[in-house]
Image (cartoon, rainbow, N blue to C red; front, top):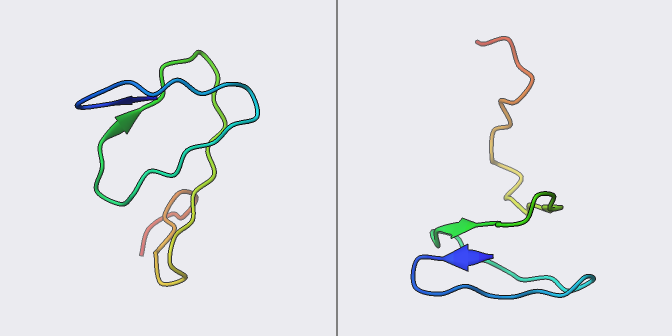
Length: 50
């Protein structure tokens, strides 16, 4: 994982928590991401519009 100020190396099976507002960038070819968001966050990924 790369952040603006430093890289962080993770081994298989490890995870990292990135606080809200921190810019991050995964650098491997394949990564798995799990997002935790408040229930009030509107998911617009598959909607046709309002």
